[in-house]
Length: 592
Image (tube, rainbow, N blue to C red; front, side, top):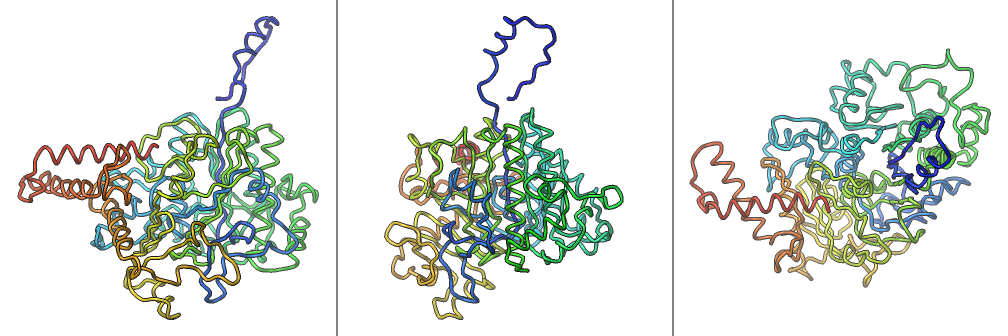
């Protein structure tokens, strides 16, 4: 915690005593930076590619820029070389980031899934419309906004909390229709734990045309987003804080056109009549006498006059990150601030569970808290791990269960567990009704009847079917993108390794069972090893999970009907004890 003392006439001896009591370092502050639809650049080791439509994940840096500020975070910090989005869409990825949960945990989405007849064998639709941060009374564990998110956890612990940029987690009726208002969305975000909400964009700009609040011609405005982020950092320099930064670019609409709009027109109002110059931001407009036009001309010049959203947007984002970095440095908070930069999803295969849609760059910069940097960490991590990890670094015990796991201790240079996380951890992925799981080098997909992955594979004569298995490694190393090597996802090896395919299919069914929208959510690791050996405190046997799951259904039947007819129900007290043990263990596991 940061301390500030009001001292008047105090003796030198007393001041010396105060000096010995003062902490040697400030408590950690936290920033999560998540640009919208950004490219995965070549130097960041992008995933292997599927060569259709030129969707090659790796890209050269834009124009003459080398994105110096983003790369400063990478070159001074920890690079997660095997980081994933739990769901490869803008809104679903943001939900998993702020909650530590899979997208299908959304209480709003579960209500819709129940109405649609979805269950463990008919997967729910993991989509942006179904993934909102709302309280839903009709579903169990439905307090996503009031309880189950990282902002609420930080605020409850006394932190200042803020959000700038794109939100994307409010219900459509508050955003893209004539009844939606900026104030209404802002109030909802504040109720969800973000006390200071500024420069906020409720949704994608091209989805806001129906709302009465957006008639003043809003557009991307990274100077204002950066200005408000810097303002939050400087205003709270004497406090502990958490800030969620969501640049609206490089996502459309047209970034080049946005740069022709007056930067004094903002989400918080039109300031053209109140300001002679633009927003004064060190690292952006300050060097151009606060003239946004002159600054933006410089961005275009560094983009080599490219008009693509990718090029202009990336440079604009990088400059904003530079402004944040410099504000932290000038206020002497940089060394004690945990900065996490990541993409919201892979752009090459957005919305799809190919590696090109799921794999993301993730860089962590925290000089006083992570030793031995710069260095790489090659284990499997996901957006669901961010919330538990940040709270672990802050020494905050969350009041709700999560799917993710903290990697705070795992990354320790001396006592960490990088190899175990890389070889034995399993991650699950959700997009629409498609699901996938990756354990070590193996990845298994369970596809829906309308899966775009299967359509593409069949069109290229690679493979066909709804259940496919891939080996993502060359020997022991994950295959990264290059211009000559196709992705292993072009080759289904399920016929060669039928037992491996069966193991992962059962594992994925475990995930579908525990995320069944019709039951009280279960938070518990599903692991291949659990099929054969005791969990030793890390999780139940898969068979035990299935028994507990069936017992919960039976218990639900008994509690609603008063009758007990199914075998799991009549198993009695022992089965119910198993279920309680399963549920409790899941809560403990979520905090590790």
